[in-house]
Length: 179
Image (cartoon, rainbow, N blue to C red; front, side):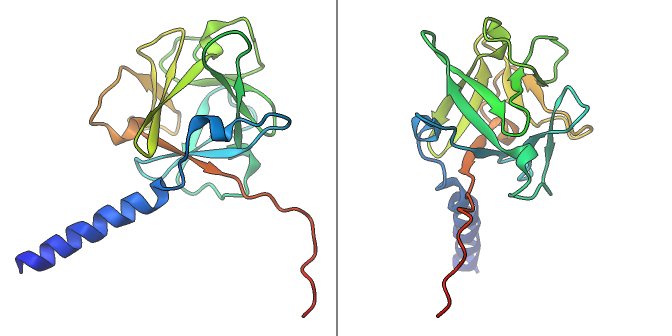
């Protein structure tokens, strides 16, 4: 019976670790000539971050389809400064905490505003995303009473502050050849 429990525990660890192996390094997700699109998936509830038209807040949804471009993001290196801008594929809008309301916002890019600057801290095969203006502000999916993404002080134990970057598979538009 004890062996069976260890077997189930090992299976659970493998089930969690399999998608984590998709995460590489942050630099591998930064395009030099064109953006490399990623999905940002939380370990808490398998929810992906997305931008909804008409909402100024970043949202999350476990049912978001991989091809839904509202959930595609790209990292842009900030010239002559540390960190990244995290921008939406559809709108080009960027994540920020300018309003300081406890929720992450998505709005038109303001390159001089520090509230738009983020750092991705790699920890094994996942990352934590924190703001460079308010250094204790980490993106979090902790509040399950809303679909808005919030930010909180770091809690090492919270899965809701752990994310993986999943490369977006691009359709090259080619037609498969006939056999």
